[in-house]
Length: 539
Image (cartoon, rainbow, N blue to C red):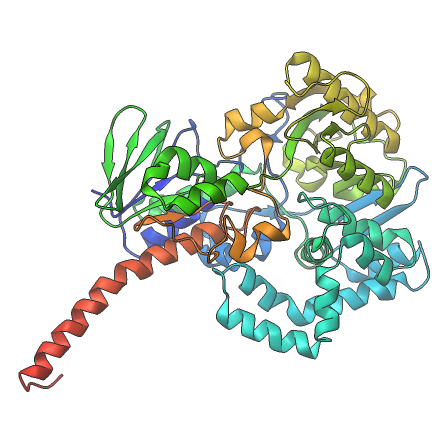
């Protein structure tokens, strides 16, 4: 009987398993897909000569994560690669904002939009330099982050106190207007905020845009050499080195609760798998509570909270094999790993508003990845392995593009939406479509079929909006990995601090399980000491 069963071999599940195995626990990881990785996998499904990441591709949070750093995955084969520029945000008139790990390059790019904006960027970087280690420590630990939070508050006071805090809770549109005269700096902040489901006018989107921008400035947006699955491979190798066990193709259909405690799981094949100490679930929150556990084992309030649970936007992705580099109108974009495609902040607002109105956007803001530019091993020399993803409403009522996309995501919907994404690329890179050798479409239902946690294409495990963060994530409570069922721990992106490949939800769940297992030992030791005191013997 293993000490712990981990449901799901995504990055959070594998991080949790590694930490438990490293602490001496016997660990079994069960994954329903035929291979591990969750949303961190690659293949050659677009063209045999091209490596394409199925889901996530760029990993600034992984590069910054103290959790992943502690695992020393480089010792297990992981290697990182960077594009010459981190990110570019071109405009259709040929201007381009550039984010580069060299602060002078970023600042000069923004200075070209408006005098003084280079210094505006440096000012934001100085705030980051003061706060960033404590910001990351606070983000990566369960809420409330007592020690890191106290350090962060002290440094925040020194960096401007309430004025600095105010800047970080601003909508990103307002933050950009306050910090920059020209459009370049505003574009970098707003485009990075839209990596989540945060509209430019949403409270807190400024802080998220600043965080992502500063991560890129400091750590870049690195990619694993050979494909995103190389990160998964390193986690699996490390787990196996610590004698952890991974079984793929085994779907868990139930968490077994006995005497009010999680004591194991049952698979879809009918196998009972006991766990002597803990069950950790790298599983979407509604699926865990409603399907695997069952509301009968949970407080009544949980059912009401789940009814209010909000998903993030759905995602639509296209992968390409290109027979040449992307013909960007703005030359700087050709050296960037990530390219944001929206013709100004107003177009970002328009895009987010259409989603809010349940319309398929007619000019979809797209995040475009140039993978061979980032890692030359991804495709033959002179070609490009590329992708773009955009967001669409989870429930579609209308098509703002007037092409009849219904949201049923049959073949016609998929082809029309992929064509629309390609036309968006063409606005910034005339001639792009002529370079497409092959393409693959990953509509929201396809994404979910490949990873059950990506429900309707939601990639962050629930909205990033303030009302479902910190102590409100995943439902109002403590913001911790413990669940209402003793012995069961939430280890997915549904837990604080949320989406992104950084391993924090898995690490928090593993540490909570380890702490819980120590409590009976400490209590037993205290009882023994008390008995010795009563007999007059020395402690």
